[in-house]
Amino acid sequence: MTSNIGSRWIYEMNEENRESVMQKVNDSLREHFKPEFINRLDEIIIFNNLDKEQIIKIVDIQLNILKERLQGKKIGLKVTTRAREFLAEKGYDTHYGARPLKRTIQRYIQDPLALQILEGVFQEGDKLETDLDDKNEKIIFKKL
Image (cartoon, rainbow, N blue to C red; front, side, top):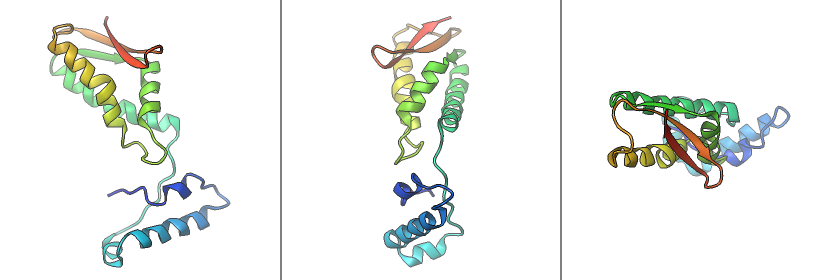
């Protein structure tokens, strides 16, 4: 289980204030959860904020899952660096972390691609590339 309780302090955490931030986060947990629940937890781990490189790695993991699914339809997918960076930017929130990334990939890649497959624009055997349409802030698809 993960929670964003105390994330407002974690965002500002550095080496000098680490102990006081940890105390504030633990205090927030105690205010939010009953002692009975906290006692059932094996461990409380406080994660550092993700940086852009880590977010892009998470995007890559999610995209690889999608690519594997598309391979079942014999459709290849290449995602450009610009598109990956766009997804990372749109899908990361300092308060919610990387949780919105899946929905972002679904919104900008999975749903539009599925529609184009259903419409017959793309079909089995196609190799596709995605790129960013800067003007319209959307992902575009083209056959390779």
